Length: 290
Image 1: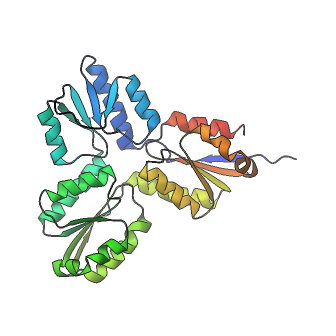
Image 2: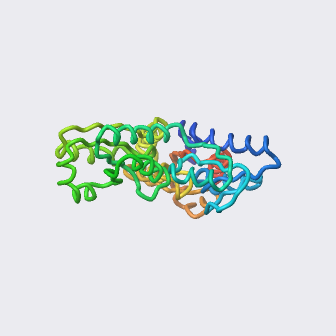
Image 3: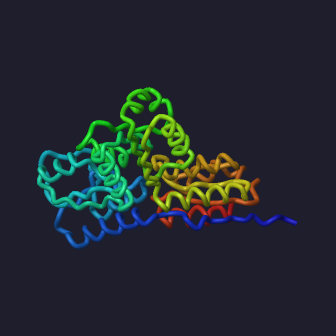
């Protein structure tokens, strides 16, 4: 008798609130302003399929801000620095801010900490646009800001941290607790006053908790989403700690893993916060026939 393959889709998979808000709102802006140029500085979210869909609506992603522009320029969900927003205004655009509300909270907390005299540690990836915006907002008020996702960077400035005494911590919304915890443990040993704001967004926490359980109970976990998406990559990294895991951007990539999929009787599927539902559906549909 042939065993039936069991496919389990995570409850928290696909667009989070902030991403859905950004995508729906930018489409609405274009529909309400059909004769205006509508653009986004950078990619609205990290998903090439969504970016192509927005282009079909006439919404363009700008790699670089022009000196002179017209129409509406949208601030993406990752946020931007105050300096960049000022440049957008000076270029002649009307600014529409679609920074994710959870990201806004991190920016505000970072500013609050540096204003209160804390040496600010931002736990995250230096090159990530969300982190760059958080850092830029904080550095308007104080230069005592560092970005890191490892202990070595902090140990390099240990004496400076000890002398400052007051240390504040904020976290990139898509980071993992496993990255935050050792940093906090280290900072406890070098600070006299430590103020920690766990700003990992609730959606990220739920997804990471769920994927861990999914991985423990399945032969294979398939994570769907952009390779450039931090939250999606973290889901794949967590799942790999417990079971075989593949990270794909869409159903076309499944054929590369056909043998592994055929051998796996219990498959868990999850997706990053910037992965559209139709792509998730395509993956689960294709899994049923492989």
